[in-house]
Length: 291
Image 1 (cartoon, rainbow, N blue to C red):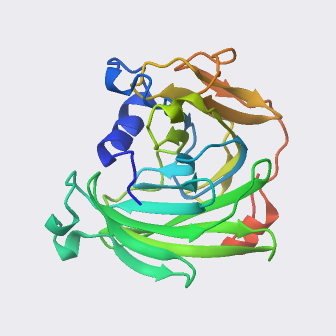
Image 2 (image 1 turned 90 degrees about the vertical axis):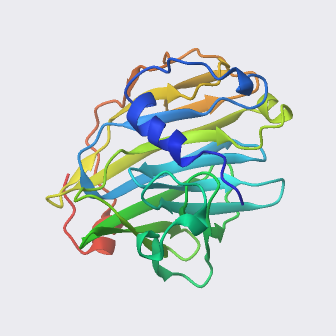
């Protein structure tokens, strides 16, 4: 399945829209699609990023990115009326779009994949490795996602995990490695995107809550994520909103949505609370949990 967000768009998201207002409207998107809305999280560099999502409203052609980071993203998608998946993608270095143009030694490498996961290379919008797990996720339910990273020579290995409620266990989906600078996990974000873009899709609202996010910093201490910044892409539509609901961040876009809560490009702070990192994360990663 072809991703709609390009690598350049996501790099722009990380470098521009998470830190400054959009300066140029993309009128080509007006009326074509719901505006993509994002949360850029304030959190330290680390080696693990955990987040949760509850989808309140969805529509075919929607990507709810839960754990975005500096070299990829991880979330859940509704493809059509029947098919839903979890998707985890990691980019090759560079800005090329033809996957065949990338030398073998510079490509994302697959180090592990669960038998239930489909893995392939992608191109046309940046290049890299992506993986899909059929997942019949439901509105109103909580889904827990985790990314871990490990530096190996000039590469960093990124692993995507998703919690399986029925089996009461964490499922290790896939591990991709890509060439990176000597850097930690960072650039954390979430977003809601309409990738159907057929005009009708813009009339359908999408709403999701994100929260109870944690980052394990480079000293292996878990730090809560309590601040996010509300940003959006260049689509001029103002049928967008963000704020707090039930002590979680929320994003909304499309349909009859109105911006009645947090203005665009403003921060959102969670209420101060004595949160505890989920105990099973410490067990999974074999390190003591820290507040």
